[in-house]
Image 1 (tube, one colour):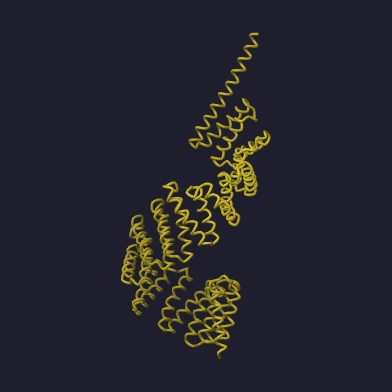
Image 2: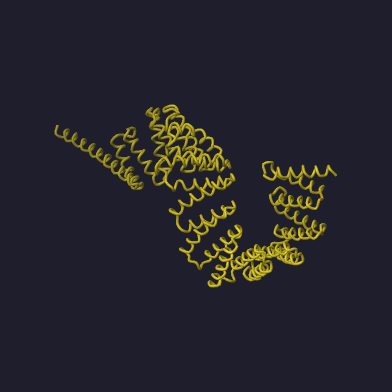
Length: 537
């Protein structure tokens, strides 16, 4: 009797120890998860799982709960395969126990799908997202927020995998329901808008992207800081791009400046300098000289602070500013910046570097704009002489510089000088990159057009046709380069009133262009005008 009582006591003590062990381990794991100590939590939950199985068995709710917690801890440090194995065990247990008709079951399916998506296994992720959506539709209905959230996850997976067609279908399907079910002032709904804006932008539906981004920004302003500037930064940048592509340049400037406002308070100096450079280029493309100038001045101060005013970066900034000043006809300002840049190069012993020649070229442009032709020529020749030294081994860049001087002479009708420089440039290209390269073809083009200006049409035409053949062989018959060349040929024939040949060339160009191309309608109009002219005769 005593032995029997002792055995019962030992059994009770043993059960109590296991229960205590599981409870303690489970609590310890929860505390570690709160601290985001996922690897440590996983080690604890592995022990807790063994304890749960011994105490409760592997069909018990506590065992399933521990499996879920272990899966979450694995997921926390991106051990997706291990996490998924835990979740799949729970799925099977729920099926075995006939507990696959509740929201918890759908939640586990959702976790399995996310795990496959995180592992870039899109095929299995699609299968489980589909299963999850079917379960949610049956258990919770399509009007439930969790149904919307799961479909949102599926859409985001397609977006991140660049499967934009499928992503767009999913986002469009949930956009309106999300507004009603989650709420039009909900951060999740705002995120859906931002994502679908990205899809519209990527698919070049700029007006649609603008509408979606603007709606997203409007919602974020009403949320009182729940969406951070860091989240807004890419949206402002993309919105600026969308407005730029839609030719709404004023709105583009506003949004680019908003993106810079965020960057100025968030990114490192090197990244900020890169942002300034990129957006300055956009401002220049949009002919927003005043905005480009302001941005370059900001960039100038940052360069001065980080690298000093005797640095190549500071000199390059002076050149960039001078280009803006030249376009906006602020010639004294351009000249002042360039002269300071020259002095800085001399002080840094950089007067033999290519950048020094670039400054001389810019001074030549200023003199040209001031109609000081002799002074401009002097600067251009100095720049060319300097490049003959600094560009040794980079003769192709030297040839481009020679072309610039030749065009200057051509503009002044100094055809003999222009011809001499163009031919010197062509000789460089003949050796490198060679007579089959488009750069050599551009030399043939330049000389051919110069000959036509001198009423030597046949000689010029011969060179232009040789150039066309090189463009055709190098780029292909339907390339933009060849099409552009053929369009130029058509315009040359039209200018010399050789209408039959011009008409023939325009028709050839029309065949090369896509109907959606901006020049397609323009070429059609040229054909109609020339046909009408010829009919009059």
